[in-house]
Length: 111
Image (cartoon, rainbow, N blue to C red; front, side):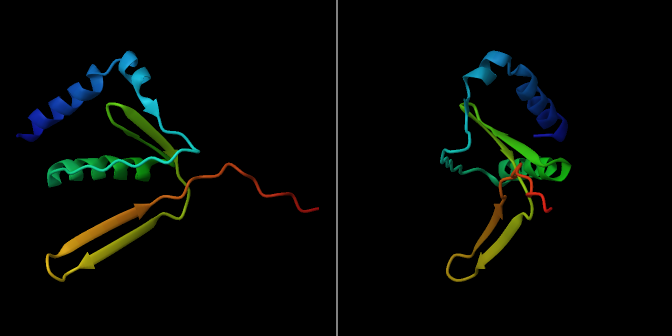
């Protein structure tokens, strides 16, 4: 698929969603455990990582969205990046990104 075709499809995906679809999503909030796993082709995973990277670069909050759920997350520092390569048998590369939650707490005063 040509890049321009992909861009127009992506633009259509974002503009076709109306508010009623957004309101039907479950918002994943603090106090709840949530896990979702996907098996994607490399280009889809790459697009996801690019979008995620742009949110990480541009702010201190990110939002991950699927058809049925939305996960807003305010992250703090430092971000942990782990690279794990297993070259035995069938080689495998695992890249893990761990984002700590941001706290809005302030330090106590010293008098």
